[in-house]
Length: 514
Ligand code: NAD
Image 1: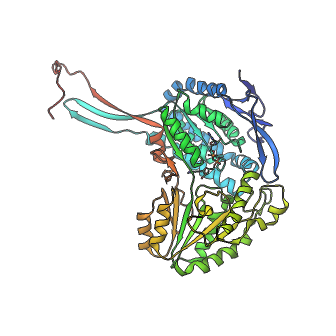
Image 2: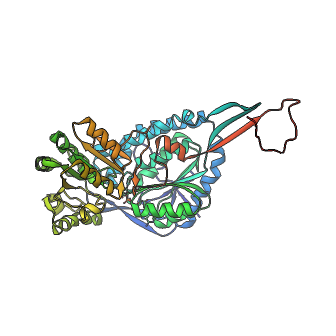
Image 3: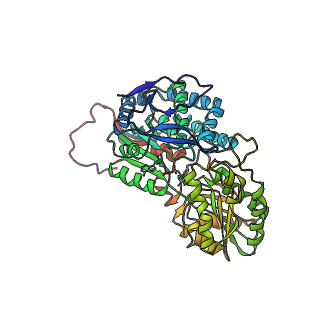
């Protein structure tokens, strides 16, 4: 039995996080009944802030049943009505962006301007989905044969699920549910258990916007919930964003259960700097993209590949900038870089500095020297810079997912491209140069889903899709934008003929004539 919790259900203006973050099923908060919960920390203080319910198989089934029951009516809701609701969602999220961002700062730790940036990029996806009447237009071919027309329509899949990572607790769900709902599907969100509160607040905004009960549901939890989603016979498709091992598991298990799956995975993004690059611009970009959001972005720059004799000046320019990065909690208005998500993750990130040094790299700046690493109970570490890295070192091979920039020095453009292309991941990459021909060649050569030219975080806008290559993506379609519409719909081709007296006859043959 599920128990509805009334706490804070209608209070949009002053959200108070629950002590145990609940599920959201059938348009209401529902307390967990499994007896299992997980801890949710305030990363800036290191304190346990609250718990989150971990769903049982039965609780997942209850959410899927609610989504399944609401699908026929939602699917039959007119396009203009669904569009109207998408506009309302967009306006409500915009009106309450500060509240959504506050949840991100409280549980993820990202500083307020970064949290607001995340919400803004999520809103772009809601805006894209407001164009759904245009996006769902099919094609029509008149008179393909005598009196026969053929046309294609795209229809929703049914109940679809989204499983999301800790690093974008508001934006990544919006990558998924905006298009999924606009196309007429009903949705189950399984957010990260590390920062779950924003998901319930956004669910309340959706209800306020007029999304019918059961169309959007949130199931909190861990592997138990994910594995039930992967096997549930009533779920038609799964969108996943997270680490590569889990993405592989989600893709392999979901497709084995005959589901459509797109699983966006880990990354190790290279920024290639050619000798003619503007060094100040490249250094600014490396620092911004390496340390922004404490390096906990899938499009963060992890490795700077410097070509030729600009390595020393570039490393110096990065070193000069690092002490000016203001590390601090989101409550400090000047803070630019917050804590990491957990103590365990912070300690793992820190361990790469000794690991790199032992392997022969030079730790040019050690984030463990930062006062907050030494003195705070929060999960802080300062920016690290590790120079003279080579491809066989763990600091290069592993996804560190923290504020650690590594530098590899090479002699030629060809060597730099080989490095980018030989790396198992291919989420994004960037080149810094003043040479248009070299940049164009890099765009042609690079094995990555997103390429930046003098732009370190080449994140597309919502009307292009987002996704990597190689071990950064399992599945065929990228997320959001036009490929998102394709993912959340299936094609139906209709061949139609209307009675025309005197033209009908029995014909057992397969049409031969044109
Ligand atoms: P994660 O893989 O640990 O978790 C992602 C989701 O999977 C969460 O909801 C989690 O509860 C669930 N999960 C975790 N372990 C599981 C297991 N063993 N079985 C089933 N489900 C499990 O990822 P994370 O640490 O939350 O996020 C960081 C990772 O996400 C990084 O690797 C980062 O590169 C990646 N990421 C990729 C993109 C992209 O677009 N490619 C975007 C954001 C983050």
